Image 1 (spheres, each protein chain N blue to C red):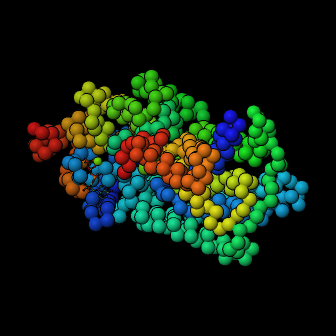
Image 2 (tube, each protein chain N blue to C red):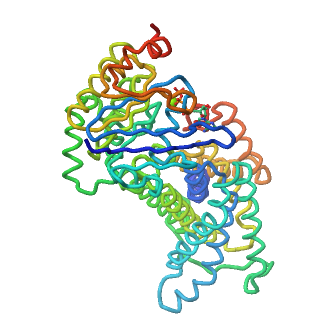
Length: 298
Length: 237
Ligand SMILES: Nc1ncnc2c1ncn2[C@@H]1O[C@H](COP(=O)(O)OP(=O)(O)OP(=O)(O)O)[C@@H](O)[C@H]1O
Ligand SMILES: [Mg+2]
Protein backbone atom coordinates (compact mmCIF):
# COMPACT_ATOMS: atom_id res chain seq x y z
CA UNK A 1 0.00 0.00 0.00
CA UNK A 2 2.77 2.40 0.96
CA UNK A 3 4.74 1.70 -2.19
CA UNK A 4 1.64 2.00 -4.32
CA UNK A 5 0.82 5.38 -2.85
CA UNK A 6 4.38 6.58 -3.29
CA UNK A 7 4.39 5.42 -6.89
CA UNK A 8 1.06 7.05 -7.55
CA UNK A 9 2.31 10.41 -6.31
CA UNK A 10 5.56 10.16 -8.21
CA UNK A 11 3.49 9.43 -11.32
CA UNK A 12 1.23 12.40 -10.67
CA UNK A 13 4.26 14.62 -10.14
CA UNK A 14 5.93 13.52 -13.36
CA UNK A 15 2.59 13.68 -15.12
CA UNK A 16 1.98 17.24 -13.95
CA UNK A 17 5.29 18.32 -15.46
CA UNK A 18 4.56 16.50 -18.71
CA UNK A 19 1.10 18.00 -18.81
CA UNK A 20 2.42 21.54 -18.42
CA UNK A 21 4.83 20.97 -21.30
CA UNK A 22 2.30 19.08 -23.40
CA UNK A 23 -0.04 22.06 -23.14
CA UNK A 24 2.51 24.17 -25.00
CA UNK A 25 2.73 21.66 -27.83
CA UNK A 26 -0.99 21.21 -28.04
CA UNK A 27 -1.95 24.88 -27.89
CA UNK A 28 0.46 25.81 -30.65
CA UNK A 29 -0.55 22.82 -32.74
CA UNK A 30 -4.19 23.63 -32.20
CA UNK A 31 -3.79 27.14 -33.46
CA UNK A 32 -1.30 26.88 -36.34
CA UNK A 33 -1.07 23.12 -36.92
CA UNK A 34 2.65 23.19 -36.25
CA UNK A 35 4.59 20.75 -34.10
CA UNK A 36 6.86 23.19 -32.36
CA UNK A 37 10.04 21.19 -32.02
CA UNK A 38 11.66 24.10 -30.22
CA UNK A 39 9.16 23.86 -27.38
CA UNK A 40 11.34 21.40 -25.42
CA UNK A 41 14.12 23.95 -25.59
CA UNK A 42 11.95 26.53 -23.90
CA UNK A 43 12.30 24.32 -20.81
CA UNK A 44 16.06 24.73 -21.14
CA UNK A 45 15.64 28.50 -21.42
CA UNK A 46 13.47 28.41 -18.31
CA UNK A 47 15.97 26.21 -16.47
CA UNK A 48 18.94 28.48 -17.12
CA UNK A 49 16.92 31.57 -16.33
CA UNK A 50 16.12 30.02 -12.96
CA UNK A 51 19.76 29.15 -12.30
CA UNK A 52 20.87 32.70 -13.04
CA UNK A 53 18.06 34.53 -11.29
CA UNK A 54 17.69 32.51 -8.10
CA UNK A 55 20.74 34.25 -6.55
CA UNK A 56 19.14 37.62 -7.34
CA UNK A 57 15.95 36.53 -5.64
CA UNK A 58 17.61 35.20 -2.53
CA UNK A 59 19.82 38.30 -2.36
CA UNK A 60 16.64 40.36 -2.37
CA UNK A 61 15.35 38.25 0.49
CA UNK A 62 12.70 36.46 -1.53
CA UNK A 63 12.11 32.72 -1.81
CA UNK A 64 14.08 31.02 -4.58
CA UNK A 65 11.02 29.77 -6.41
CA UNK A 66 9.91 33.36 -7.05
CA UNK A 67 12.52 33.34 -9.82
CA UNK A 68 9.94 31.45 -11.84
CA UNK A 69 8.20 34.76 -12.51
CA UNK A 70 11.26 35.99 -14.37
CA UNK A 71 11.60 32.60 -16.09
CA UNK A 72 7.99 32.81 -17.27
CA UNK A 73 8.61 36.25 -18.74
CA UNK A 74 11.85 35.21 -20.42
CA UNK A 75 10.30 32.05 -21.87
CA UNK A 76 7.25 33.95 -23.08
CA UNK A 77 9.54 36.46 -24.80
CA UNK A 78 11.58 33.70 -26.42
CA UNK A 79 8.41 31.93 -27.58
CA UNK A 80 6.98 35.13 -29.03
CA UNK A 81 10.35 35.94 -30.62
CA UNK A 82 10.59 32.52 -32.26
CA UNK A 83 7.10 32.91 -33.68
CA UNK A 84 7.76 36.43 -34.94
CA UNK A 85 11.22 35.88 -36.37
CA UNK A 86 11.05 32.32 -37.63
CA UNK A 87 7.60 30.79 -37.83
CA UNK A 88 5.37 33.60 -39.04
CA UNK A 89 7.46 34.53 -42.10
CA UNK A 90 7.78 30.86 -43.08
CA UNK A 91 4.08 30.25 -42.57
CA UNK A 92 3.25 33.13 -44.90
CA UNK A 93 5.50 31.91 -47.72
CA UNK A 94 6.13 28.23 -47.22
CA UNK A 95 4.35 24.90 -46.77
CA UNK A 96 3.66 22.83 -43.65
CA UNK A 97 6.89 20.95 -44.34
CA UNK A 98 9.03 24.09 -44.43
CA UNK A 99 7.44 25.21 -41.17
CA UNK A 100 8.25 21.88 -39.55
CA UNK A 101 11.86 22.04 -40.71
CA UNK A 102 12.10 25.59 -39.40
CA UNK A 103 10.93 24.33 -36.02
CA UNK A 104 13.61 21.63 -35.95
CA UNK A 105 16.19 24.22 -36.95
CA UNK A 106 14.99 26.56 -34.21
CA UNK A 107 15.44 23.79 -31.66
CA UNK A 108 19.02 23.13 -32.74
CA UNK A 109 19.68 26.84 -32.87
CA UNK A 110 18.54 27.42 -29.29
CA UNK A 111 20.57 24.49 -27.97
CA UNK A 112 23.73 25.61 -29.75
CA UNK A 113 23.19 29.21 -28.85
CA UNK A 114 23.02 28.23 -25.19
CA UNK A 115 26.28 26.30 -25.46
CA UNK A 116 27.94 29.27 -27.11
CA UNK A 117 27.09 31.52 -24.18
CA UNK A 118 30.25 31.53 -21.98
CA UNK A 119 28.33 31.54 -18.71
CA UNK A 120 26.58 28.33 -19.75
CA UNK A 121 29.02 26.19 -21.70
CA UNK A 122 28.76 22.48 -22.42
CA UNK A 123 28.68 21.12 -18.85
CA UNK A 124 25.53 20.69 -16.78
CA UNK A 125 24.86 23.30 -14.13
CA UNK A 126 23.41 22.43 -10.78
CA UNK A 127 20.45 24.28 -9.35
CA UNK A 128 20.00 24.93 -5.67
CA UNK A 129 16.97 23.82 -3.72
CA UNK A 130 13.64 25.52 -4.29
CA UNK A 131 11.35 24.03 -1.71
CA UNK A 132 11.97 22.98 1.87
CA UNK A 133 12.92 19.36 2.37
CA UNK A 134 10.77 16.92 4.26
CA UNK A 135 7.12 16.30 3.69
CA UNK A 136 3.88 14.84 4.92
CA UNK A 137 3.60 11.36 6.28
CA UNK A 138 0.54 9.66 4.86
CA UNK A 139 -0.28 5.99 5.38
CA UNK A 140 3.28 5.16 6.29
CA UNK A 141 4.97 6.95 3.40
CA UNK A 142 6.53 10.39 3.17
CA UNK A 143 5.30 12.64 0.39
CA UNK A 144 7.91 15.31 -0.05
CA UNK A 145 6.95 18.94 -0.46
CA UNK A 146 8.36 19.16 -3.98
CA UNK A 147 5.96 16.45 -5.10
CA UNK A 148 2.99 18.03 -3.37
CA UNK A 149 3.79 21.51 -4.69
CA UNK A 150 4.34 20.25 -8.22
CA UNK A 151 0.99 18.53 -8.32
CA UNK A 152 -0.81 21.42 -6.65
CA UNK A 153 0.76 24.16 -8.77
CA UNK A 154 0.09 22.29 -12.01
CA UNK A 155 -3.49 21.71 -11.01
CA UNK A 156 -3.99 25.39 -10.24
CA UNK A 157 -2.24 26.50 -13.43
CA UNK A 158 -4.36 24.17 -15.53
CA UNK A 159 -7.52 25.31 -13.84
CA UNK A 160 -6.59 28.92 -14.55
CA UNK A 161 -5.85 28.03 -18.17
CA UNK A 162 -9.21 26.33 -18.47
CA UNK A 163 -11.04 29.34 -17.06
CA UNK A 164 -9.02 31.57 -19.38
CA UNK A 165 -9.97 29.64 -22.51
CA UNK A 166 -13.62 29.36 -21.51
CA UNK A 167 -14.39 32.72 -20.01
CA UNK A 168 -12.12 35.42 -21.36
CA UNK A 169 -12.35 37.13 -24.70
CA UNK A 170 -8.80 36.25 -25.68
CA UNK A 171 -9.31 32.66 -24.57
CA UNK A 172 -12.42 32.34 -26.70
CA UNK A 173 -10.62 33.94 -29.62
CA UNK A 174 -7.93 31.28 -29.27
CA UNK A 175 -10.54 28.53 -29.45
CA UNK A 176 -12.09 30.13 -32.51
CA UNK A 177 -8.81 30.52 -34.38
CA UNK A 178 -7.91 26.95 -33.56
CA UNK A 179 -11.27 25.72 -34.85
CA UNK A 180 -11.78 27.82 -37.94
CA UNK A 181 -9.31 30.52 -38.86
CA UNK A 182 -11.27 32.22 -41.61
CA UNK A 183 -14.49 32.31 -39.59
CA UNK A 184 -12.47 33.78 -36.70
CA UNK A 185 -11.21 36.56 -38.99
CA UNK A 186 -14.78 37.31 -40.06
CA UNK A 187 -15.69 37.77 -36.39
CA UNK A 188 -13.02 40.48 -36.15
CA UNK A 189 -10.39 38.38 -34.37
CA UNK A 190 -6.75 39.21 -35.10
CA UNK A 191 -5.12 35.87 -35.88
CA UNK A 192 -1.60 37.25 -35.43
CA UNK A 193 -2.34 38.59 -31.96
CA UNK A 194 -4.04 35.36 -30.96
CA UNK A 195 -1.14 33.22 -32.17
CA UNK A 196 1.36 35.40 -30.29
CA UNK A 197 -0.67 35.08 -27.10
CA UNK A 198 -0.72 31.32 -27.55
CA UNK A 199 3.05 31.21 -27.88
CA UNK A 200 3.46 33.43 -24.83
CA UNK A 201 1.23 31.24 -22.68
CA UNK A 202 2.59 27.93 -23.94
CA UNK A 203 6.18 29.05 -23.38
CA UNK A 204 5.35 30.49 -19.98
CA UNK A 205 3.95 27.11 -18.96
CA UNK A 206 7.27 25.56 -20.01
CA UNK A 207 8.99 27.83 -17.47
CA UNK A 208 6.70 26.57 -14.72
CA UNK A 209 7.46 23.01 -15.82
CA UNK A 210 11.17 23.82 -15.72
CA UNK A 211 10.89 24.97 -12.11
CA UNK A 212 9.03 21.83 -11.08
CA UNK A 213 11.39 19.56 -12.96
CA UNK A 214 14.65 20.98 -11.68
CA UNK A 215 13.25 21.25 -8.17
CA UNK A 216 13.30 17.44 -8.36
CA UNK A 217 16.28 16.82 -10.67
CA UNK A 218 18.52 19.84 -10.08
CA UNK A 219 20.70 19.59 -13.16
CA UNK A 220 20.30 21.88 -16.16
CA UNK A 221 22.01 21.23 -19.49
CA UNK A 222 21.45 22.42 -23.03
CA UNK A 223 19.65 19.28 -24.17
CA UNK A 224 17.47 18.98 -21.07
CA UNK A 225 14.42 19.59 -23.24
CA UNK A 226 15.06 16.81 -25.73
CA UNK A 227 13.75 13.71 -23.99
CA UNK A 228 11.50 15.71 -21.69
CA UNK A 229 10.01 17.51 -24.68
CA UNK A 230 9.63 14.29 -26.63
CA UNK A 231 7.77 12.60 -23.79
CA UNK A 232 5.53 15.60 -23.31
CA UNK A 233 4.84 15.60 -27.03
CA UNK A 234 3.93 11.92 -26.76
CA UNK A 235 1.61 12.91 -23.92
CA UNK A 236 -0.03 15.55 -26.11
CA UNK A 237 -0.55 13.01 -28.89
CA UNK A 238 -1.85 10.36 -26.49
CA UNK A 239 -4.42 12.81 -25.10
CA UNK A 240 -5.31 14.13 -28.54
CA UNK A 241 -3.11 16.84 -30.01
CA UNK A 242 -4.73 20.24 -30.30
CA UNK A 243 -7.09 19.53 -27.40
CA UNK A 244 -6.26 21.27 -24.12
CA UNK A 245 -7.83 18.76 -21.71
CA UNK A 246 -6.16 16.04 -23.80
CA UNK A 247 -2.72 17.40 -22.97
CA UNK A 248 -3.55 17.36 -19.27
CA UNK A 249 -4.87 13.81 -19.42
CA UNK A 250 -2.05 12.61 -21.67
CA UNK A 251 0.54 14.09 -19.33
CA UNK A 252 -0.90 12.26 -16.35
CA UNK A 253 -1.15 8.98 -18.28
CA UNK A 254 2.49 9.15 -19.35
CA UNK A 255 3.64 10.14 -15.85
CA UNK A 256 1.76 7.26 -14.26
CA UNK A 257 2.95 4.75 -16.85
CA UNK A 258 6.48 5.88 -16.16
CA UNK A 259 6.28 5.66 -12.39
CA UNK A 260 4.44 2.35 -12.26
CA UNK A 261 6.63 0.67 -14.85
CA UNK A 262 9.70 1.86 -12.96
CA UNK A 263 8.40 0.64 -9.62
CA UNK A 264 6.86 -2.64 -10.65
CA UNK A 265 8.56 -3.75 -13.86
CA UNK A 266 11.95 -2.33 -14.67
CA UNK A 267 13.44 1.12 -14.51
CA UNK A 268 15.46 0.55 -17.68
CA UNK A 269 12.30 -0.20 -19.67
CA UNK A 270 10.43 2.94 -18.61
CA UNK A 271 10.84 4.82 -21.88
CA UNK A 272 9.92 1.70 -23.81
CA UNK A 273 6.61 1.59 -21.96
CA UNK A 274 5.96 5.25 -22.68
CA UNK A 275 6.24 4.65 -26.39
CA UNK A 276 4.36 1.37 -26.13
CA UNK A 277 1.43 3.28 -24.64
CA UNK A 278 1.66 5.74 -27.51
CA UNK A 279 1.44 2.94 -30.05
CA UNK A 280 -1.42 1.21 -28.26
CA UNK A 281 -3.44 4.43 -27.96
CA UNK A 282 -2.84 5.34 -31.58
CA UNK A 283 -3.90 1.88 -32.73
CA UNK A 284 -7.17 2.07 -30.79
CA UNK A 285 -7.84 5.80 -31.16
CA UNK A 286 -5.69 7.37 -33.88
CA UNK A 287 -6.71 10.88 -32.85
CA UNK A 288 -5.77 10.32 -29.19
CA UNK A 289 -7.88 9.57 -26.12
CA UNK A 290 -9.97 12.74 -26.31
CA UNK A 291 -9.54 13.32 -30.04
CA UNK A 292 -12.36 13.02 -32.52
CA UNK A 293 -11.58 10.97 -35.58
CA UNK A 294 -12.40 13.49 -38.23
CA UNK A 295 -10.43 14.17 -41.36
CA UNK A 296 -8.25 17.25 -41.10
CA UNK A 297 -10.33 20.25 -42.08
CA UNK A 298 -9.13 22.35 -44.97
CA UNK B 1 -30.03 55.97 -54.21
CA UNK B 2 -26.68 55.85 -52.48
CA UNK B 3 -24.16 53.21 -53.55
CA UNK B 4 -22.99 51.20 -50.56
CA UNK B 5 -20.74 48.55 -52.09
CA UNK B 6 -18.88 49.31 -55.28
CA UNK B 7 -16.55 46.95 -57.10
CA UNK B 8 -14.60 48.15 -60.12
CA UNK B 9 -12.58 46.06 -62.55
CA UNK B 10 -11.70 43.44 -59.94
CA UNK B 11 -9.18 40.73 -60.79
CA UNK B 12 -8.40 37.79 -58.49
CA UNK B 13 -6.08 34.84 -59.05
CA UNK B 14 -5.09 31.76 -57.12
CA UNK B 15 -1.53 31.32 -58.36
CA UNK B 16 -1.90 30.64 -62.04
CA UNK B 17 -5.68 30.15 -61.84
CA UNK B 18 -7.49 33.33 -62.82
CA UNK B 19 -10.74 33.17 -60.91
CA UNK B 20 -12.08 36.73 -61.39
CA UNK B 21 -11.15 38.48 -64.61
CA UNK B 22 -12.34 42.03 -64.26
CA UNK B 23 -15.79 42.43 -62.77
CA UNK B 24 -17.62 45.56 -61.70
CA UNK B 25 -20.75 45.62 -59.61
CA UNK B 26 -22.66 47.85 -57.25
CA UNK B 27 -25.05 47.35 -54.39
CA UNK B 28 -27.10 50.34 -53.29
CA UNK B 29 -28.06 51.12 -49.74
CA UNK B 30 -30.99 48.94 -48.71
CA UNK B 31 -30.89 46.78 -51.81
CA UNK B 32 -31.00 43.00 -52.06
CA UNK B 33 -28.79 42.00 -54.96
CA UNK B 34 -28.02 38.45 -55.96
CA UNK B 35 -25.02 37.04 -57.71
CA UNK B 36 -25.80 33.83 -59.54
CA UNK B 37 -23.70 31.51 -61.66
CA UNK B 38 -22.59 27.93 -62.18
CA UNK B 39 -20.19 26.00 -59.96
CA UNK B 40 -16.72 27.47 -60.12
CA UNK B 41 -17.88 30.74 -61.69
CA UNK B 42 -16.14 32.71 -58.95
CA UNK B 43 -19.02 33.70 -56.66
CA UNK B 44 -17.36 32.63 -53.42
CA UNK B 45 -14.09 34.18 -54.58
CA UNK B 46 -15.87 37.49 -55.11
CA UNK B 47 -17.29 37.46 -51.57
CA UNK B 48 -13.97 36.34 -50.07
CA UNK B 49 -12.22 39.19 -51.83
CA UNK B 50 -14.74 41.72 -50.54
CA UNK B 51 -14.18 40.61 -46.95
CA UNK B 52 -10.42 40.37 -47.41
CA UNK B 53 -10.01 36.62 -46.92
CA UNK B 54 -8.56 36.44 -50.43
CA UNK B 55 -6.40 39.31 -51.68
CA UNK B 56 -7.41 41.15 -54.83
CA UNK B 57 -4.91 41.32 -57.63
CA UNK B 58 -6.17 44.62 -59.00
CA UNK B 59 -9.28 46.74 -59.08
CA UNK B 60 -11.12 48.53 -56.32
CA UNK B 61 -13.65 47.57 -53.68
CA UNK B 62 -15.27 50.27 -51.59
CA UNK B 63 -17.92 50.24 -48.91
CA UNK B 64 -19.54 53.61 -48.41
CA UNK B 65 -16.44 55.18 -49.93
CA UNK B 66 -13.97 53.32 -47.71
CA UNK B 67 -11.34 51.36 -49.62
CA UNK B 68 -11.74 47.80 -48.33
CA UNK B 69 -8.46 46.67 -49.84
CA UNK B 70 -6.63 48.94 -47.39
CA UNK B 71 -8.34 47.44 -44.35
CA UNK B 72 -7.07 44.36 -42.49
CA UNK B 73 -9.49 41.43 -43.00
CA UNK B 74 -10.39 41.30 -39.32
CA UNK B 75 -11.27 45.01 -39.30
CA UNK B 76 -13.85 44.76 -42.05
CA UNK B 77 -16.59 43.77 -39.62
CA UNK B 78 -15.92 47.01 -37.75
CA UNK B 79 -17.07 49.11 -40.68
CA UNK B 80 -20.39 47.29 -40.86
CA UNK B 81 -19.86 44.46 -43.30
CA UNK B 82 -20.66 40.93 -42.14
CA UNK B 83 -20.06 37.77 -44.15
CA UNK B 84 -21.91 34.48 -43.76
CA UNK B 85 -19.54 32.09 -45.50
CA UNK B 86 -20.38 29.17 -47.74
CA UNK B 87 -20.70 26.02 -45.66
CA UNK B 88 -21.76 28.09 -42.61
CA UNK B 89 -18.49 27.73 -40.66
CA UNK B 90 -20.05 27.81 -37.23
CA UNK B 91 -17.68 27.01 -34.36
CA UNK B 92 -18.64 23.38 -33.92
CA UNK B 93 -17.14 22.89 -30.47
CA UNK B 94 -18.84 25.95 -29.03
CA UNK B 95 -22.43 26.24 -27.95
CA UNK B 96 -25.01 28.19 -29.91
CA UNK B 97 -24.81 31.04 -27.43
CA UNK B 98 -21.00 31.10 -27.47
CA UNK B 99 -21.12 31.28 -31.27
CA UNK B 100 -23.45 34.24 -31.06
CA UNK B 101 -21.19 35.85 -28.48
CA UNK B 102 -18.30 35.45 -30.91
CA UNK B 103 -20.40 37.24 -33.49
CA UNK B 104 -20.31 40.22 -31.15
CA UNK B 105 -16.56 39.88 -30.53
CA UNK B 106 -15.90 43.49 -31.54
CA UNK B 107 -18.79 44.89 -29.48
CA UNK B 108 -17.65 46.20 -26.10
CA UNK B 109 -20.98 47.36 -24.77
CA UNK B 110 -22.39 44.43 -22.76
CA UNK B 111 -25.91 45.83 -22.86
CA UNK B 112 -25.80 46.04 -26.62
CA UNK B 113 -24.64 42.43 -26.86
CA UNK B 114 -27.55 41.36 -24.70
CA UNK B 115 -29.99 43.36 -26.79
CA UNK B 116 -28.66 41.91 -30.03
CA UNK B 117 -28.78 38.41 -28.60
CA UNK B 118 -32.44 38.90 -27.81
CA UNK B 119 -33.13 40.24 -31.28
CA UNK B 120 -31.39 37.30 -32.92
CA UNK B 121 -33.33 34.88 -30.73
CA UNK B 122 -36.52 36.66 -31.73
CA UNK B 123 -35.61 36.25 -35.40
CA UNK B 124 -34.60 32.62 -34.94
CA UNK B 125 -36.59 31.13 -32.04
CA UNK B 126 -35.09 27.75 -32.82
CA UNK B 127 -31.69 29.05 -31.75
CA UNK B 128 -33.08 30.21 -28.42
CA UNK B 129 -34.36 26.71 -27.70
CA UNK B 130 -30.93 25.29 -28.44
CA UNK B 131 -28.76 27.97 -26.84
CA UNK B 132 -26.70 25.48 -24.81
CA UNK B 133 -26.30 22.89 -27.56
CA UNK B 134 -22.94 22.47 -29.30
CA UNK B 135 -23.12 24.05 -32.74
CA UNK B 136 -21.57 20.97 -34.34
CA UNK B 137 -24.61 18.93 -33.35
CA UNK B 138 -27.16 21.26 -34.97
CA UNK B 139 -28.93 20.32 -38.20
CA UNK B 140 -27.84 21.98 -41.42
CA UNK B 141 -30.74 24.41 -41.34
CA UNK B 142 -30.11 25.33 -37.72
CA UNK B 143 -26.43 25.86 -38.47
CA UNK B 144 -27.39 28.21 -41.27
CA UNK B 145 -29.64 30.15 -38.91
CA UNK B 146 -26.80 30.27 -36.41
CA UNK B 147 -24.33 31.52 -39.02
CA UNK B 148 -26.79 34.24 -40.02
CA UNK B 149 -27.63 35.11 -36.43
CA UNK B 150 -23.94 35.33 -35.60
CA UNK B 151 -23.40 37.74 -38.48
CA UNK B 152 -26.26 39.92 -37.24
CA UNK B 153 -24.80 40.37 -33.75
CA UNK B 154 -22.91 43.53 -34.73
CA UNK B 155 -25.95 45.11 -36.45
CA UNK B 156 -24.11 45.29 -39.77
CA UNK B 157 -25.03 47.71 -42.54
CA UNK B 158 -24.43 45.03 -45.09
CA UNK B 159 -24.54 41.24 -45.24
CA UNK B 160 -22.75 38.93 -47.65
CA UNK B 161 -24.60 35.61 -47.84
CA UNK B 162 -22.89 32.70 -49.59
CA UNK B 163 -25.30 29.94 -50.59
CA UNK B 164 -27.48 30.02 -47.50
CA UNK B 165 -29.81 27.36 -48.94
CA UNK B 166 -27.10 24.85 -49.75
CA UNK B 167 -27.97 21.32 -48.73
CA UNK B 168 -31.27 22.20 -47.10
CA UNK B 169 -34.67 20.53 -47.56
CA UNK B 170 -37.24 22.45 -49.63
CA UNK B 171 -39.15 23.54 -46.53
CA UNK B 172 -36.02 24.90 -44.90
CA UNK B 173 -34.97 26.60 -48.12
CA UNK B 174 -38.29 28.46 -48.06
CA UNK B 175 -37.79 29.35 -44.41
CA UNK B 176 -34.26 30.68 -45.01
CA UNK B 177 -35.39 32.74 -48.00
CA UNK B 178 -38.25 34.24 -46.06
CA UNK B 179 -35.77 35.23 -43.36
CA UNK B 180 -33.58 36.89 -45.95
CA UNK B 181 -36.63 38.81 -47.12
CA UNK B 182 -37.34 39.89 -43.56
CA UNK B 183 -33.77 41.09 -43.09
CA UNK B 184 -34.06 43.00 -46.36
CA UNK B 185 -37.26 44.67 -45.30
CA UNK B 186 -35.60 45.57 -41.99
CA UNK B 187 -33.29 47.71 -44.12
CA UNK B 188 -30.13 45.58 -44.23
CA UNK B 189 -28.28 45.72 -47.53
CA UNK B 190 -27.63 42.22 -48.85
CA UNK B 191 -25.43 40.67 -51.50
CA UNK B 192 -26.71 37.12 -51.94
CA UNK B 193 -24.84 34.33 -53.72
CA UNK B 194 -27.04 31.41 -54.66
CA UNK B 195 -27.17 28.22 -56.69
CA UNK B 196 -30.92 28.32 -56.31
CA UNK B 197 -31.23 31.07 -58.90
CA UNK B 198 -35.00 31.00 -59.13
CA UNK B 199 -35.58 31.60 -55.44
CA UNK B 200 -32.79 34.16 -55.30
CA UNK B 201 -34.14 36.14 -58.25
CA UNK B 202 -37.67 36.03 -56.93
CA UNK B 203 -36.72 37.90 -53.73
CA UNK B 204 -34.00 40.17 -55.14
CA UNK B 205 -34.15 43.72 -56.46
CA UNK B 206 -31.36 43.25 -58.95
CA UNK B 207 -28.94 40.51 -59.98
CA UNK B 208 -25.65 39.81 -61.71
CA UNK B 209 -24.83 36.63 -63.59
CA UNK B 210 -21.24 35.46 -63.19
CA UNK B 211 -19.73 33.18 -65.82
CA UNK B 212 -16.15 31.91 -65.38
CA UNK B 213 -14.91 35.07 -63.74
CA UNK B 214 -16.80 37.59 -65.83
CA UNK B 215 -20.20 39.17 -65.47
CA UNK B 216 -22.25 38.06 -68.45
CA UNK B 217 -25.57 39.70 -67.59
CA UNK B 218 -27.09 42.03 -65.06
CA UNK B 219 -30.31 43.85 -64.46
CA UNK B 220 -33.57 43.85 -62.55
CA UNK B 221 -34.15 40.48 -60.94
CA UNK B 222 -37.65 40.25 -62.40
CA UNK B 223 -36.31 40.81 -65.92
CA UNK B 224 -33.63 38.17 -65.50
CA UNK B 225 -36.19 35.77 -64.13
CA UNK B 226 -38.04 36.00 -67.43
CA UNK B 227 -35.00 36.18 -69.68
CA UNK B 228 -34.77 33.17 -72.00
CA UNK B 229 -31.02 32.73 -71.71
CA UNK B 230 -31.10 32.88 -67.93
CA UNK B 231 -34.05 30.52 -67.82
CA UNK B 232 -32.27 27.97 -69.96
CA UNK B 233 -28.89 28.20 -68.23
CA UNK B 234 -29.82 28.66 -64.58
CA UNK B 235 -33.48 28.01 -64.01
CA UNK B 236 -33.71 24.63 -65.69
CA UNK B 237 -36.55 25.74 -67.94
N1 LIG C 1 -8.07 28.22 -52.74
C1 LIG C 1 -8.11 28.04 -54.08
N2 LIG C 1 -7.00 27.69 -54.76
C2 LIG C 1 -7.02 27.53 -56.10
N3 LIG C 1 -8.12 27.70 -56.86
C3 LIG C 1 -9.25 28.05 -56.25
C4 LIG C 1 -9.31 28.24 -54.84
N4 LIG C 1 -10.57 28.59 -54.51
C5 LIG C 1 -11.27 28.61 -55.67
N5 LIG C 1 -10.48 28.29 -56.71
C6 LIG C 1 -10.89 28.24 -58.12
O1 LIG C 1 -11.44 29.49 -58.47
C7 LIG C 1 -12.58 29.33 -59.28
C8 LIG C 1 -13.78 30.00 -58.63
O2 LIG C 1 -14.11 29.31 -57.45
P1 LIG C 1 -15.27 29.79 -56.47
O3 LIG C 1 -15.21 28.96 -55.26
O4 LIG C 1 -15.20 31.25 -56.32
O5 LIG C 1 -16.57 29.42 -57.32
P2 LIG C 1 -18.10 29.49 -56.92
O6 LIG C 1 -18.78 30.26 -57.99
O7 LIG C 1 -18.29 29.94 -55.56
O8 LIG C 1 -18.52 27.95 -57.06
P3 LIG C 1 -19.61 27.10 -56.22
O9 LIG C 1 -20.92 27.43 -56.77
O10 LIG C 1 -19.22 25.69 -56.51
O11 LIG C 1 -19.45 27.46 -54.80
C9 LIG C 1 -12.75 27.84 -59.47
O12 LIG C 1 -12.18 27.49 -60.71
C10 LIG C 1 -11.98 27.24 -58.33
O13 LIG C 1 -11.45 25.99 -58.70
MG1 LIG D 1 -19.04 29.07 -53.86
